[in-house]
Image 1: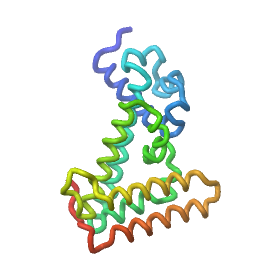
Image 2 (image 1 turned 120 degrees about the vertical axis):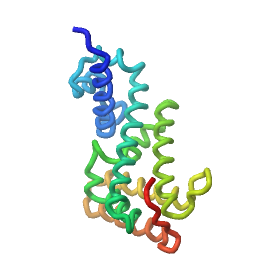
Image 3 (image 1 turned 45 degrees about the horizontal axis):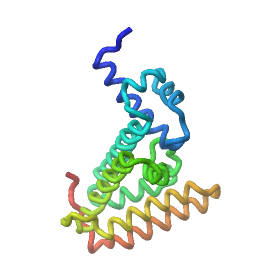
Image 4 (image 1 turned 90 degrees about the vertical axis):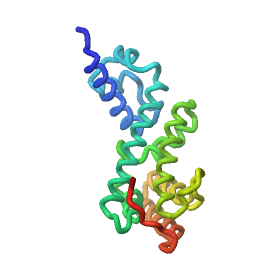
Length: 201
């Protein structure tokens, strides 16, 4: 039976959504097309009608994952307009986020994988990372220039690294200490005197 154009697009979006979660859980090379398409409720044959290659899907799924993560940052910040960066740090550097393998930050889950992918996947990551940096930059008063601020880059690097390390160990106490130390370091680096509590765009 022929699938309508509307249904085909709906199926395509479902595959991108499912892939954005499964890639975060298993890595780009940790799940095959057959299992991925089955998880989306479709056949492997349908894949090639919707995507040029697995790399094409990886780039689109990465973009979707990063957009989802950015919305979560925005929601955390909007929920606490008096201290948006504090709210984002509390959410991001939490044991709950550490446990979110399928829905957590794609930079944490796939950053090292992305470094080995092609230019399209890297472009998706670069765009998402720049969005993170712009948001952080607004809060540290260094958002006017084209280049991301040093403070924003240091904060993001510390936050991502802490979640990576916290996931890499079995010891839950040590894991929590990585997150707590990073939160303390980031907040100290983004001193209250420099922070600008601008509303989100």
